[in-house]
Image (tube, rainbow, N blue to C red; front, side, top):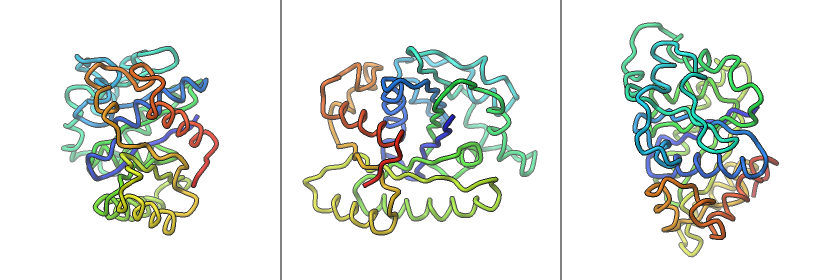
Amino acid sequence: MRRIAVINQKGGVGKTTITANLGHALVLAGYKVTVIDLDPQGHLSTCLGIFRPPQKGMDEVLLNGMDIATVTMVTRESLSLVPAGGQLGEVEQLHDGGAARARLLVDGLKDQFIGQDFVLMDCPPSSGLLVTNAIFAADEVLIPTSGDYLSLTGLANLMSTLKKFEPYRKKPLDKWIELSRFVNRRRLANEVKEKLLKHFPNQVLATPISEAAVMAECPGVGRTIFEYRRTSRSAKEFAALADDLIHTRCM
């Protein structure tokens, strides 16, 4: 099983969109996938068609030690979801427990999801306790990065943050960078891509996800791109991105 945290401290780079659509792309490629919503906003549920998400989810797992299996929902064949839950934001306010607070998710995932191929964790745009939990629970991180310099700066800060956690992990994280909301005709976007390739060789996944209006429409109807516009360019890109991730294919 591959546990992958979808992380970027900067907002608006497409973390939730990538988690939902990449998860479905992996299912269509023949894998069993669970996606976990670690963002208190709870938008991952909406992307998968659950407009009234249950009040119990990851909040109960992290705050009260509930068995994660009891709050896991099957949304499509071979695609399961653990929703955020109404009180997930309270995790950031935890003060008791010392270092154990950072490993609540590790404990919650222990011996869970046997038989699953991928677990994708959609993280909030922050560097708080929820993201810390994801970093300790994951084996890999996928970092969506849009084609602008602010996103590039955010990536550098995130890489520095991840490096600080390495001494406390049993093994180093594999790090993958995904070009998201990419506009190939923009000079700036291509400059950012070249800088990424220079500074992070063999870490930038081969298929960028292009900026597209159709991607913004999908959450409104609770469908992934494969259900909403299966023949679109975006659907083909996400299918290719899934293949990149499966075979760790980079630019």
